Amino acid sequence: MKKNSSASKNYILLPVFRTNISKQDSPNVARFLAMLSNSVEQSATVSLASRNMHQKASDDIPVVVLDSIETEGAKLIRINADELANFRFSYPGLRIIKEKFYNPAVCSPKRIQLQVEQAEIKTSVTVTVKGEKDKALAGITVVIFTNFAASKGASGVTDSKGNIALNLDRNTAERIYVYADHSYWGYFKKDVQLSASLEIKLEPIALDFKDSLRYFYDTAKLPKITQKVRVGIIDTGVGPHDDLKVTGGKNLVRGENEADYQDNGEGHGTHVGGIIGAYGKLNGVAAGVEIMSYRVFPKGSGASNFDIMKAINEAITDQCDLINMSLGEAQTDEGITSYIKEAYNAGIVCFAANGNDNRSPVSFPANDSLSIAVSAMGRLNTFPPDSVESGSVQEPYGTDKDNFIADFSNIGPETDLTAPGVGIISTYPDNLYAIMDGTSMACPAATGMAARILAGNPDLLNLPRNQTRADEMVKYLSVNIKSMGFGNLYEGKGMLHLRPQNK
Image (cartoon, rainbow, N blue to C red; front, side):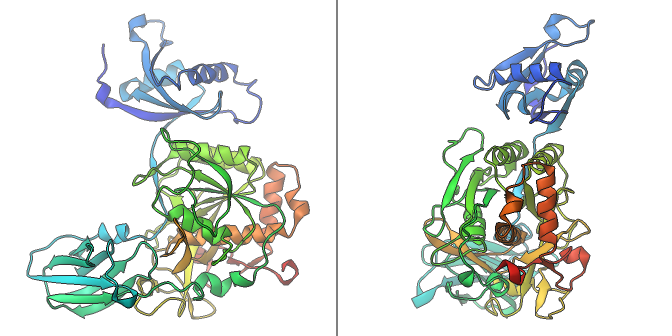
């Protein structure tokens, strides 16, 4: 009987065996996956024989092979959901995982906007946003809450004259958020009496400003790393920016140009890359590291778990030492877990962002036992008083009461480290600079400091690339961690710091 093609969905076929060792124990599975690899280029339907002796040939299972990781590795297929059980019984020895998608772990205006609910209109206000020299700022996101707890308010983006007209249910704003993509700090204010017009002036970014990253890691004074350390960044792409040198990489987004691994325009990966390795007008934590850019995010969309798996596999092939994953999702993923294990077995340690769901449980892949999970902290007086970051201050406070765990940061027993993630200045495509908040920013701060610490131990980096190497790297990092006084659910073991002998 002909199946309904509209019920077809994408799934990942994952072999039980490790992809980088002999397939002698599973020769049939290996041959089957190799056969499917031949169908990737055509993306045509392959009719696979059902192994049920009582079924007719006309009951073959139609499968479209969309993508592949190596000849005998994982496959992305499209199959009718009604055929899954038949497929599992016909081709045992394969794990079948649904394709799903991940978001960058950045605390963005999208997160705030999603909470806004239109209410009965009682008043209108025109907000004008200006920058330095009273320049009108276009493309600025403005969000006004009249009742934050009930998610009532309105939001929009400024026009070419810096204006946005918003309709509200009352003339008092409980909270106002203003977000700039780049070049300016955001704005935050509580309990504002509204009139027909409201003018907000944003503060420009000064590159010599001491944000929380530079408070804890004085990047301008840290020497450039000369020991070869390679960091893979799985993100939206990295660059272009004069402060960033990208050694290489690959675009893993299906259907896009593999050689185009620069930023997709959203800026997240370039910001992450700058925190790790910028060197120029602004320095990152580990200036001098080799950056490998693995783009997995199409513009405006989430990253497929299959593309993330491909990216980790590329990082293994390229012999990265560390992998940064500033991305996350609530549910665990067997496919990505398998490749994190592959990386660890190849002597590579993965760092992942805890997530930005307002103290929710640690997201995946940070909660994977082989990942280093990083929460986000901030420090008072490392951002302007009326900036968006002032709304992220929340207890618990650390041993130093000016330190706090960001209100948006996910927490839990899987947390391994904390790092600065509130009001971070870093690179943005086309030689711009931007402020971003999130465990997305804390994660590369930790990754970069780990790279700097490991650069001080070349004998460790020269160990054979196996699990022992990864074990020793983690143990070496552990003696360079300082408790910040937040407690293990919030900071894990603490924050990475350079010991005096490593300077």
